[in-house]
Image 1 (cartoon, helix red, strand yellow):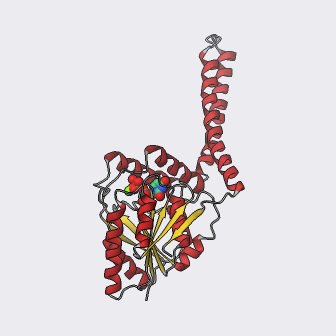
Image 2 (image 1 turned 45 degrees about the vertical axis):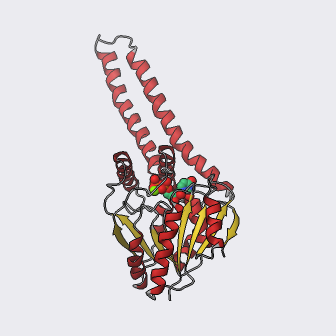
Length: 313
Ligand code: UDP
Ligand code: MG
């Protein structure tokens, strides 16, 4: 029988958590009843340094002897790290990660389990439509998947971190030592057999999104610089093009100076290239700096998170 683990990262989720836990425990109970999963299946709630009552709620569930294991991270480390903490701590044969806000349809977990039984190591939950998200979120998300595609990073479009992974896939994931792990890019790299299950994404059940624009930009930057050297190549290409263009222009300038009387000591031809090249150089330095910064962070190899407390295990 399959021991299932549900991993839920929670950051200031006191408004939704009771409903989420209710629904997930009901789901587990139903699956156990139906003989699909082992009775030892658990829900892992990872408190990512919440400032509200999230942790006391989790402690209460664990004390009520519900099938809940609570992990408290020592401080807020962000969604990806909280997720990792849960995935690595979870015991079980199939591990499903899901957000705390009930935006992802939990009914498809059963289908995910079917795929798992058919031999898939990774089953991606993919959103069919994003009607519930704001237009802004939809546009930025679409743009993001497109840019990632151009940059050559393999990601599954419209798949967030709602997925099932086998024990074997989790063990493989443990071997990636990056401090800045972008899971959506890493998991397709594992290469194990995978499947997609589609669902409709609904609105947040309660509470606010914890991904403001600033965090979305940082996730996207992180994703690009972790998976692609295309920005660096673009710089070289830009440099090459500018140099070639300059050569052509120089020939023309020389020709005008030598064979005509139209040559006016030019302001534009002096000042424009200074600004233009200044801009190109600053941009290029910025891009290179982004990668150097990444090297700096990865070279330090700092731990990704600390688990401060575990309850209900
Ligand atoms: N989350 C987290 N740490 C953070 C931010 C978010 O663990 O620093 C969790 C959050 O509790 C939720 C999930 O990550 O379970 C996704 O966050 P959210 O729903 O706010 O993102 P959105 O769906 O708006 O992209
Ligand atoms: Mg959400």
